[in-house]
Length: 277
Image (cartoon, rainbow, N blue to C red; front, side, top):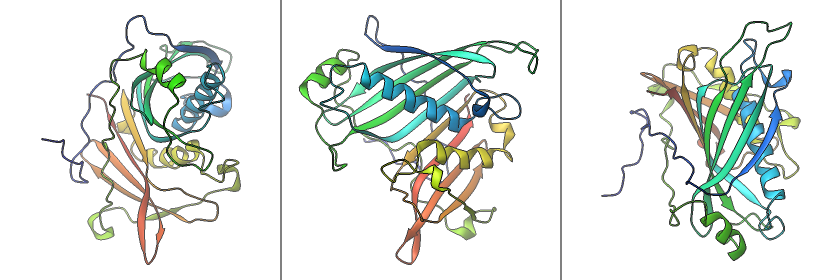
């Protein structure tokens, strides 16, 4: 039987992200945490992690032989497992590889590991950071439509894994509960012109800035290892109002980022945050 769709009445299932295939090639690079990336506790924020993943992806594509044939990709989902937070000051090492793929999309894994450092502002030693991520990337053409991965790119990516028939399966419930079914009232999230990229798409980091605001009231979910899953359903364009609908179910926070559609609201993105067992 096919797996059942997630519902808003049950927390999402957890399973660890797959490791890299032994001997497979991968991209790697070294980066530095900046003060603009961290919260008041020196923890690298989720929106900063989204920027890191975008930078690593761009650097990875530029380093490949198919940077001209397959330059356009959009993210359908990102999973972030914070096993040990990255903090400031520190440098971190990124490793990126393809964990699974099909003819039009891939699961790209990124591992971030950091060596914690100290300075005059943060003199107490902290654990080294360790974050595992996986993103569902769709190859698109110049018009933004899903497109077949070229033979050159497919051959290179398929050598990194043994799963070549990747299929989409939602991890978050797409349908938001009715307003009367949630304890917290809907709230508006104000977007800025700087939240949008040159293609008039809301930057991936901007989505998670809204989630960081929500987690201020759910600190228990991120005090230890935790997972965030964000799935992008519909585009958010400049001038579009955003409404956040929130629901806490046991040890999981669900957030639906709602946009107008006819006379109703529909989810443009769904988010879940919960502790890793």
